[in-house]
Image: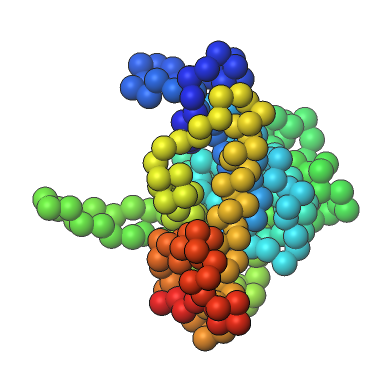
Length: 276
C-alpha cells in the first residue's frame, strides 16, 4: 500500500481508505511476485485500494513458469486461484486457514498427508477429480498434500504456539520432505523486506509524488524496475564470490549506486565497486 497526492483524479481512480482510517491520502495496492533468494520483484500488478489481493494475484499467472515453487500466505487461498496457478505448471506451497476442513486420504511417511481441496460452488452438482481429466479448468476436486506443524513463540508473560497448515502440489515426499517445505515457507516473509526496500529506502517513506493516475502507475513501475536493477546487481556481485545475496546490504548498495550516478568518475569502469 503506497500513498499518493490527494488530487481529484487520484481520488476518483485509487480512492481513499474508509472506515475512519487516519491515512488521508489515496492509496494504491500492489501484489508482487518476488524471488525469495534475490528479493527481486519479477512481476507486479497495481490496483486501487478497493482491489482485492486475490484479484491482483490472479493477473500474475502469465509470469509463472513450470520451474517455480510459488509460496503464498493464507490470505491468498481460494480454490479458483489455486487452480489458476496450478494450471501454469508451477508447483505451489500455500498456507491455508485452519478453519477449512481437509479430509485425510492417506498419511505419508514424513508425517504429512494427502487430501483434496474442493470447489464448493460446484461440488453439490458434480464431482470431477483433476487426476482423472486432462483439463484442470473443469476440476471440482484437486489432490494436495498437507503439512501441519507448530512454532513456539515467547512474550514477556508466557509462551504460546501457532499452528501452521500448508498445502502443496508437491504430493511426493521423496521430491520434497515436509521439513524442507516448512523451512521454505518460513522464508516467505522476505517479500516484506523487498517491499520495505522500495517504500522506505527508494522512496524514503515519501510515497508517490505524481498527481495523475497514469503518472502514478508510471512512477510505481519505475520503482519496481529500479529495485529489480539494484537487486540484480547485488545478486551478480554475490555470485562472483559465491555469497548469499542476503548477506549484502541493500542500503549500502543503494548508496554506492547513487554516488556512482552523481559522480561517475568515482569508480573505474573496469573495477566494479566492492560490496560487503
